[in-house]
Amino acid sequence: MISAAFIGPGTVTTAVSAGSQFGLDLLWAVTFATLGCIVLQEVSARITIASGLTLGAAMIASFGERKGRAAQWVVGISVMLGCAAYEAGNILGAVSGLNLVIAWPGWLLTIIVTVASGAILWSSRSKWISSIMTLLVLVMGIAFAALALSQDLGPISLLKSSVVPVIPTGSELLVLGLVGTTIVPYNIFLGSGISKGQTLPLMRIGVSISVLIGGLITAFILLAGNSIASFGSFHELATAMSEKVGNWGAVALAMGLFAAGFSSAITSPYAASIITSTVLGDDHKGRIRATWMLVLLTGFVFGISGVRPIPVILAVQAINGLILPLLAAYLILVVNDERIVTKAHMPGMIYNIVLLIILFVVLLIGLNNVDKSLIAWFGLTGSHLGLIVVVSALAGLGIAWRAYKVRSEL
Image (cartoon, rainbow, N blue to C red):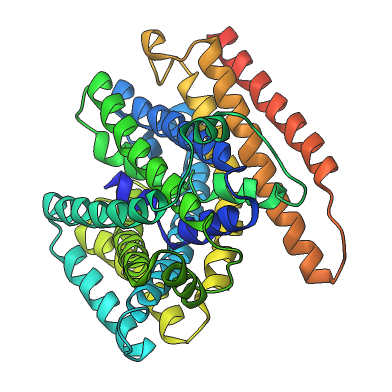
């Protein structure tokens, strides 16, 4: 389920863009994002398993009743809004995949995808949903692996590109985009919600394998993008794939894109319903069902409106960037609070340093997206990346000091 939620149309769009524009140079960003996602999911699930509390209850235990309730609503509503925003891109992405092989009207395909997603969610059978996700991830993995492996790529260059950071001129935003589309807020809550009742070692194995599969598929998508000169739309990409590797390339792209969109169209509302119970503490079945229905309806409205897929999918990354820093900072503070997590399960110094590096990167993503939005809103030019780096570093140091004080006081 985590692997299925990991790869959505936003991942396809961003990774293909990175591959087509910069070849293998940004493959290291996929590696970093994958490891960062594993760490944050592990911390989130660790808090739930070690404390026996949901993330929402942990907020109250850590911050007190009044501040904890406020934190619950700020984090919970923000992430659920992110789920709704992603759902629009998920449905549009699934429809775009179908459109590559089926010449049906977009509105009809949108209805079909929405109804099919709703039927699966209505069943409320988590094992059945998980089995469907497994099948879709398998289809997606095979499709994008076939496109990636059709190229003649040397293993040495692949290994080097995977671990050596390189930021070519003009690639800064795509680097942040690759991290932002990989470390997804609702996926972190999804990992915590479905890990309840497991042991810590078993949880770590499950999270690591699930996220690594997602990271591998993202790498395949980037490698597939490496085979084309430019990327403007999915139809253009399908044409380029046909010319490059044959007609099967367009079919593989359609299958992979549909699997990415449809699997995420199910997991995004499902994650929102989990947030309703684990963060907001509402176990009422009617309200939980109403939550995923509202998220699904949001995606349907955007899909039926005829909005072009790629601009919507890319715009969702900005919302993701605003939520991530808040969530990462919260996890760092709570996992270092001995009142919530016993000392035996608290992270050591090296693990905390890794967490702070990830926090710095997601802060950079969030503030950069805010900066881009303000520039576009007021019709300005240029960017303020240098200032954003300084502000992100200072904010990260502030969280580090706060976590240190919590541990020292206890």
